[in-house]
Structure formats: structure tokens, C-alpha cells
Image (cartoon, rainbow, N blue to C red; front, side, top):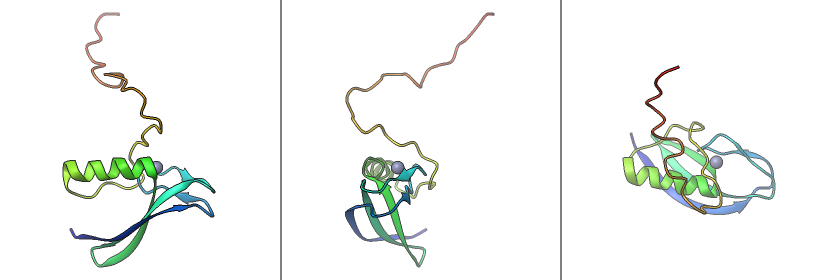
Length: 96
Ligand SMILES: [Zn+2]
């Protein structure tokens, strides 16, 4: 798998796009990251919410490979506090 980054720009959406990371809409007037890559010889333009671009970059640092488009979770915009363990460790339900 080869993926060559050509360039990234931050732009304001003039029309609606679909975020390549979370699959949600990028609304008109919203800033988004436009990233141009050559993926396996095919030039592509990926559009991502800015926070999704951060998440994608982090994912890449961690795993060093591409991600599944449209199937990732959009990070909440304001990274206020971490909700520790809200979505994790929900096992161990016994009884009834
Ligand atoms: Zn997104």
C-alpha cells in the first residue's frame, strides 16, 4: 500500500462535502482540511473536519497505515475534559 501526500490546505466549504474520516457532512462555511494524496497511483482529494484530520493524523502516527474511510468517530470539538472510562469497561454485568 502506498500513499503519497502532496499537500494540505485548510479551506472554507463553499458547498457541502462528506468528511472522509467520520462520514458526516462538512457544512457550507465550515473550515475543513483538504488533503491531496496519491493513493496506489490514484490521485485523490480527501476532505476532513479539522478535528477529524487531527484524529486521522494521530491514528496514522499510532498505526502507520491508512484508515477505513467514513467509519470513524468524529472527535468532539471542544476538548474540555476527558470523560474517563465512559465508553470502556462496561463489562461485568451479573445478576438479574
Ligand atoms: Zn469528520
